[in-house]
Image (cartoon, rainbow, N blue to C red; front, side, top):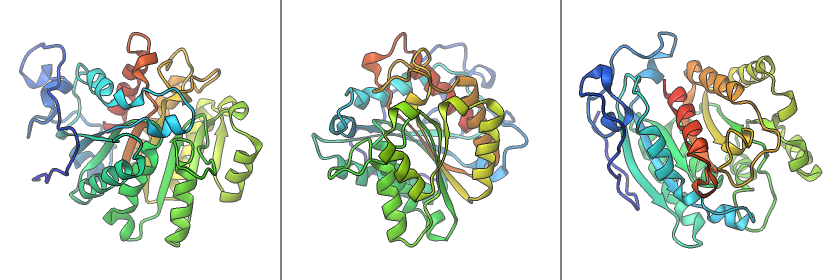
Length: 325
């Protein structure tokens, strides 16, 4: 499939990593990205839906932390796309489909909304061209940019039921006069209502002490499904995700890395005092991948300035790798 590259602000940069050889059995991500036909045949799980397994992957960076700044968080997430690529590069490549790095959409100054619109157009175009899209954020304002792309794609125009699954310690349903990293899902709810569609939103990992009563009330009014972090045992999360997947046709998955314990993900805007264990989050990602319903995914809130030994970036890279297999 020929890929018509969307306009981006920063072109793709060279990928790097450990070199063990040129053969298919030695390949790592850095050797495969942006190399047409350079895949590792026969490595995808047999139970992955054929349509999902066959789609080429398109990576897009969203270099933004304006939403975090507006939300009074620790800025630095604009450097996350480069850190995520650095963490992905050395990983062994076990996918059976090509991966293309499109480059970055970068928010210029305080003009978050224009950046979100540009990313949305790029995502919609790539989805309509038959790609599975992955956005490397960025603060969680990335989520609304992703939504603009997903909701503008042919999948939604054709009437398929969209579900938004958020792995996150926060609802991000703030009602504020200016959009930020704390508002994207309320923005989505209003956009879905304007379009005459049901807002299907679920969150795994909500931290009760870090979400006000108003946010819980907003979630209840909107019919949001959620699990508190303290209730996120492996079986409970598996059943929760399965029930949500059963009610939708296509899924947009967004991972706010602050859903993980601070020891696992220290490099975020708001480190978690409790968090959901990595094995539980990883299992949920694998469950989503195997469903065959994953249309688009993004990873948000990595802040390299506060990371320790690249721990958060490496964890995020592993989750992305899991979701694409």
